[in-house]
Image (cartoon, rainbow, N blue to C red; front, side, top):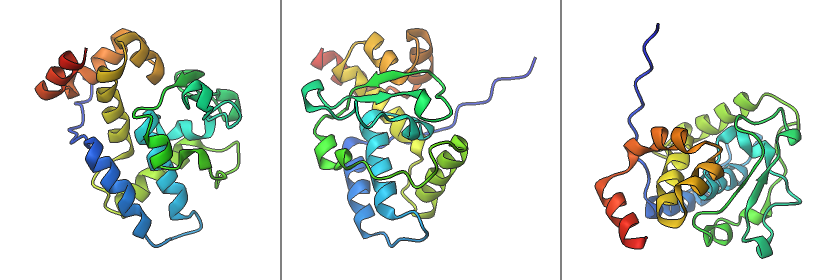
Length: 188
């Protein structure tokens, strides 16, 4: 029986840091055929909704961003090759980021609808690395998971991220700092 891989160390970005990084992307020069604005939008989606980079292609444009439904995203695996944890609805955290990051603008995907989702995710990670953002795409997902503690129940958080409660707790418990716990209890 093989050993489980050791979890990667992460320095999760604060809400302030996420906004700073997003704003700094306004000054990036395009480096290839996929423009910087697309990656800036992806950054905002990953931060606001905690998606995996591969799940960008599963966003249902018609059902998502409805203000009457608090701008939730609808992920539908039929729009791409399928998604790891199935179709689901995802609430924005923080809701004001939908407007701040102009997420309703939904740019055209620079890829064919059907294509290698892992290749797309790798391109996003390469963009983060090439532009020295100081974080990885999954850091935004983990930061979202930590923020969920302040805004929703554990069950709702697990559902939003496509997990069961046990898996959600196992994955994210180690990233919750004492100050996050204190803030969560105070808010609750």
